[in-house]
Every structure is written in C-alpha cells, then in structure tokens.
Image (cartoon, rainbow, N blue to C red; front, side, top):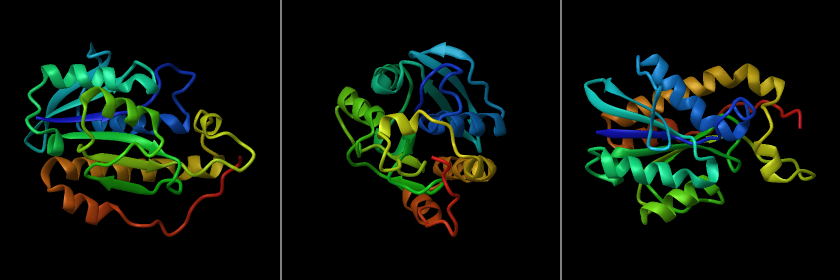
Length: 198
C-alpha cells in the first residue's frame, strides 16, 4: 500500500497556519477521493481506501509537529507498506520555497524542518519521498518559528485553493507513476508569487 502523511499541528488554533499546509493537502486529497480520515490510530487521524486502484492510507499525526516521527513509525510497523523508498510520501510546508511552489524529492535531509527531522530520527532512514509546499520565507524581522505559525496573507489566501489543488494532483500522480514522473511534472517554478502581508 501507499501511505500519505501530512504534517501539521492539531487543533483549531493551528488549522489555518502556514505550518499546517501538509494537513490541508492530505485533507483535500482525501475529500476529493472519498476517503474518511476520521479513525484515531497511530497517534493521529487515519483513513484508508482505494484511489485509482491503489490501496492508500492517509495519516495526520496529532503528536504535534516536532514529534511526527512517533506516529509515522507506529503506522509503518502495522501497515503493509512494502518499500518506504517508493510507498511512503511525507507532505510538509517549506519556508525555502516561494508560496505555493511544489518540490518533490526522493529523499535527503530535513532542511531544518523539525517534523521531517523527527521522522528521519525515528525510522532511521531518509530515503523516503517527500512533497514540500512552499509557504515563503519569513521577513527579516521575524523568527521562522513565529512565521510558520501565522496564517497566510490575504493575497496568498486568494491563491491557496488552486495551489493546494496542484499539490493534490501531485499526490495522485505519486500513486500511479514513478517518482521521476512526479518530479518532472510538478517541480517547476511558478509564474507569479503573491505578496505577503507580513
């Protein structure tokens, strides 16, 4: 099976923040494809079903971002994920990418993302695919940790639905194509970037 994990923080306080882009993408993916992510399993919200003929699990860890690896490790110990290097996809925000830009990679380091860092530490490997969603860089006067816990600017919010839909298409492509195809199709620069209110 394929396991899609969106990273974020639980609760209404964080729901609309930049740091919860991973949650929002997998929730949109699940809704579009008729999956209910309502079971309480693996330290988070979990759902399972078939999409494009593929057995798919969707997980939103509710351990808070910095402990995301606990939920991922538990899920991998129970679910029939055959090859982490091709069947696990971690979806997260990224402050090194312009707003809405996607970057798919087959593995690598955490890039300063504490959720990814904890997953790598807990499962003991970093060769799993990840989909990063750009949330823009923090202004020079603001700490990155504070920035990602803010909401999107008004202009960004206007463009957010279409950018999230593009990320959902990347997840759907991951289910049925080789990762190289996903990378070639979705790792491209955006034509315009909304201005931040920060």
